[in-house]
Length: 365
Image 1 (tube, rainbow, N blue to C red):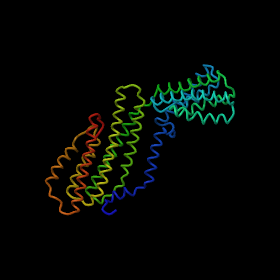
Image 2: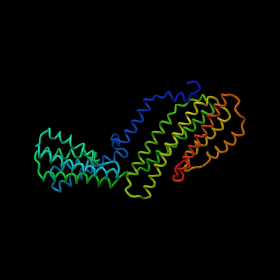
Image 3: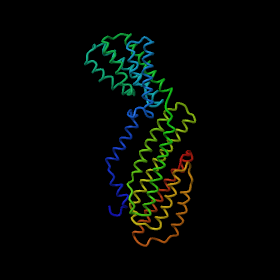
Image 4: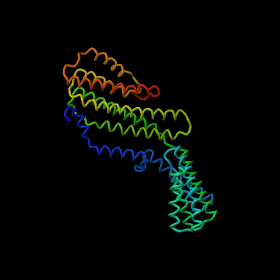
């Protein structure tokens, strides 16, 4: 790794498997809703909502005189989802998939009897059909009601209608609970934004230090942490947006959060490009110190609640200063100054992204 600054060598030597594991753990936790840590944050609320929906469904099924009211509670558990929009979509899919499943099961059980191999045949036939109809979310729900019919051992109109009633009550209870309350993610998004801004500020400070001293050692963990936080912010902002059923000021605010985190995602790619260019800066020249001052300013601007334009002005001034400087004397100076110039171009692209999105956004540089 000759010619690569020590800090970048250290970044390259970071344990790749640990990085991969951290990212997989983050995404798995976000996508699944992370039922662990059960009484904290959104997960605790979801568990409480599931309990309420289940009990409500059982009570209503009892009052309606349904056979096996506990089945309504089970269906309610399956119907509770992470967002309002997703809840409406999946409840519809589960109900329609279950109706299709009941029709197919009634046909097979009526013609071939209540045998285990007929149940297996139902799975082989029904599951692909349900998936083909884009009701994949309802495969489990349809299996519950069909297994109820199979367990009864008889096929009657009353039995089929009872399963439809349990479906309506269970999934209806889940829908009501989902629509009544969804947690406000604003405080969580504000906290994540502050953490992301802090990571960016630290990254720019480290870049500045390396430009002044190419032997400076930095492990680069802020880049990994910033990327994870940005992904977490995108997930939570998307979830908050899906909880808005009508266009209001709140939905506009959620869209702003998505713009912010996607902006940071794009800017992080620019930062990674800058780090690659720094591998060619193996000596410090006056130009390096001047660009380091720009990164010092950016490390402050990134924490401001609005686009300041200070860093952009410094870059514009720097262009004029560079034009007035003497040409490189040695090959090494030429290579370093060329790399520094490319760093400036990447930084201009970073600011271009910020300036473009700040027309819609007032959250930070």
